[in-house]
Length: 84
Image 1 (cartoon, helix red, strand yellow):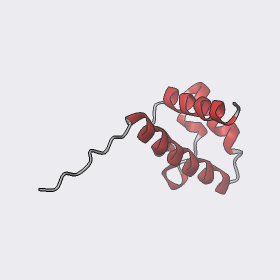
Image 2 (cartoon, helix red, strand yellow):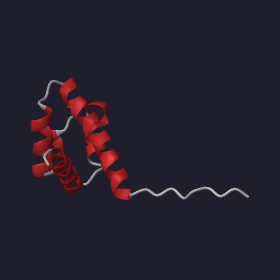
Image 3 (cartoon, one colour):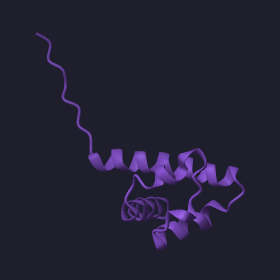
Image 4 (tube, helix red, strand yellow):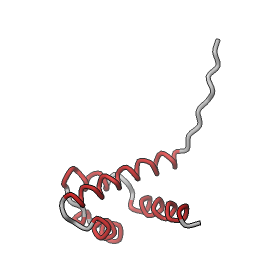
């Protein structure tokens, strides 16, 4: 019998990776439509109003899959990593 090593993963890492993919796709969709992606995403994060995000390429539904607080947490974590 062969024994396979147990793989460990952190759910937080998966959440961060998924959120990064979603933010990238939403950012690019907003940019494609001629919006300022940073302003639109910040408006959404502050207000919770999905109207800030275009429905182009399903960007609005994608960003709503992730809790806004989780997005802010991941953004601040990345900021901290890049500014040590």
